[in-house]
Length: 99
Image (cartoon, rainbow, N blue to C red; front, top):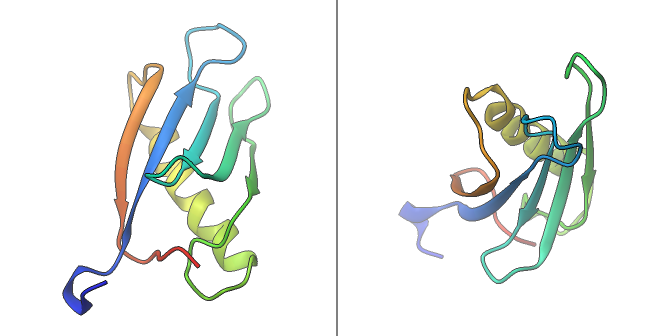
């Protein structure tokens, strides 16, 4: 990766699992289709966020709290957007690098 272009693209699949018209799950994938993480809103008020990280996204070679915080930050950004619909988002995360 070139020094000036640090970061990675992540695919966010937006899902309405309980069919209430609101996005309540995001599955994060690398561009080659490997699972990165899963984020779920898990209460009626949509205030609680549960995140499961499956692979290193900070590039430090460890699956740790840094990965969890990065995915949680990106999930919160997405969930805050108005009028979300099921589908895919391609997002660039400048402080990430697949380990």
